[in-house]
Amino acid sequence: MDKIIVKGGHALKGTIPISGAKNATLPALAATLLTGERIHLSNIPHLKDVTTMLELLGQHGSAITVDERLGVEIDNSGVNNFRAPYDLVRTMRASILVMGPLVARHGMAEISLPGGCAIGSRPVNLHIDGLRAMGAEITLDEGYIRARADRLHGAHIILNPVTVTGTENLLMAATLAKGRTILENAAREPEVTDLAIFLNKMGARIQGLGSSILVIDGVDELHGTEHRIIPDRIETATFMVAAAVTGGDILLTDTDPEALETPIQIMREAGMAVELPEPGRIRVHVPDALRPVDLETCPYPGFPTDLQAQMLVLNSLARGTSRITETVFENRFMHVSELQRLGADIRVHGNIAEVHGVDHLLGAPVMATDLRASASLVLAGLAARGATTISRVYHIDRGYERIEEKLQALGADIQRTTS
Image 1 (cartoon, rainbow, N blue to C red):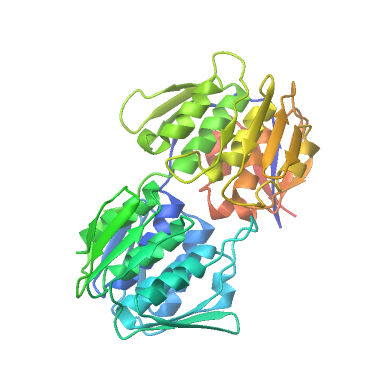
Image 2: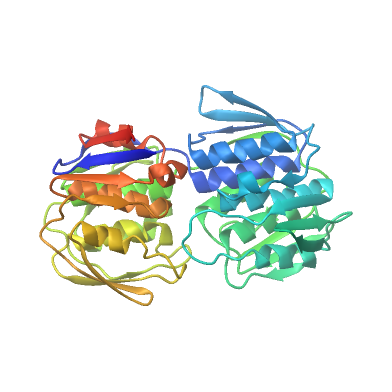
């Protein structure tokens, strides 16, 4: 099993390009199932989750060509299998995103109940209830969701609570439904907006992009197109924190500062100098000591839950006490015990982590519990004195492209080993 060994104490300096967003790539790949014409997607990150989604499309009957421009061409004219098996779905929750497109275009889908990171309950009932409201007959049997519909019809659906994958699944399904669908309390994340832009390029009729109310007028068919995936805002922010906790100076390219308005505000409050020298670029350095900052995770445009673990590391090295409140997932502080092994002074009270800053962290063996937790342990290792060995790093390969190589390019002493 692979491990990552980090020897801390090196200030990260240099320029690093940001990859395409995993959380925009996965729904876009699923959306290609809505047409039998060719689709070309570019700026695709090389990640385990992306590979899994491509394998899932392949077993549905998609013809996939990967090119040298970080892109894929997909031809779904030969799709003839509508089952998403447990062996693929169990590793990645986003696999459920094929359900809406399959039912909308082919009238049937059989999807294993999904897996993914063990960060709390993420029920799929909103996906099911929404498709039922659109006329699908759905049963749950032997761990599979079985859905059928001659043709979906429009419906007024209120999503409570707000759900990113639920919004995306129903948005895709609605593009081929008969009549108008209104999704109220829809997720506003940039990845959802990117999906809607892509669908409109395919001939969908979606209004309200970027808002909490999406209006979709169904069409008879969608067509092929080209689309470039947006930059990964979570990878961007993770490298920003890396610069802060190591006392470095990093220029991030090929990114989108507008998608990070709230995190940038919080990071500036924490003492980070965040400069926007030109479009698509962010420079980060820390002129003075880090300051503790309170924050609460919430859906976009609030502070993302996917950056909570990284900010725990930053606050652990700040001078003073801070509180981080997790409101999205009820079990997303599993990384705290591992950070404590490195010397972090964090105390969890329900959904609140109280952080008391320490002078330094000390390297130690730790274990990743989920995708973003693994990133936080790498950050902590970069800032710690001595060596930190991180096991179960397959988590990090699900969401960060070539993270060791990118950090090495910035001067980090980091390597992957196989034991």
